[in-house]
Length: 274
Image 1 (cartoon, rainbow, N blue to C red):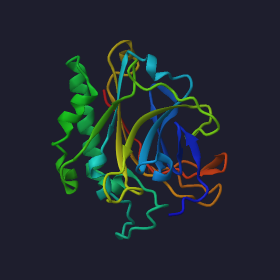
Image 2 (image 1 turned 30 degrees about the horizontal axis):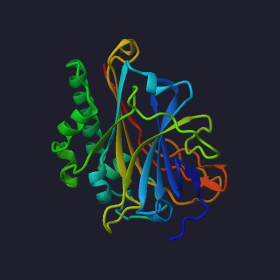
Image 3 (image 1 turned 120 degrees about the horizontal axis):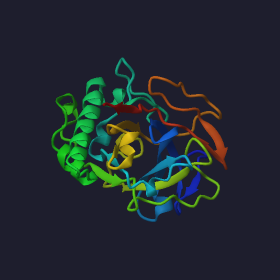
């Protein structure tokens, strides 16, 4: 397989294909980002990997936010069964096609899942015991009816992204795989390839949850829930603009050495309910 010219050396490895999506939060006037990076076995000495990184503006240090509980939920159990398709059902080039969570999950599932997670986060916060692992247990075998076409969720992995137990920002040297070269980048999760099943172009739904547990309640009166559907992107023509709006991707940029960052199509569904 050819990986084109894309190369990003970060986190003691090399990402050969990358997808980036952003989402807005009351925690910052600037957007936060998710980056998915593909690492082939030639760079891991074992098996292929998909790595996930959270990008934050420098003024937002999530490690010190004890007043916010932040969770990232990776729905890896259904990723192999998802695809971005054209309205007529045609599946385009798997390497370069982008889309939205509505494309991958369906409009109703996208909405119902977001609301389900919001209500769960609100209830756990009200009980004074919001734990990321508890969200997984509550969601694992109770997908909304509109999502049953994917069957059970299968594996959901939860990661803590705020507080002293969350990952610290990486020391970057030359490659910053986000929308802004000044952003801090944190390595949140790594998933190795298992067996011979399809892997590179799988679409991973990521649900990001922020809920105020302290003084931040004055700013965040209700939990935030953001849904992104991520996949690595193969190279596009240099400086190509990817359509914005309706959950489409950001502008592709080639500011990294020997690299064009093709930004993945996404839907950042944010819920701010009072």
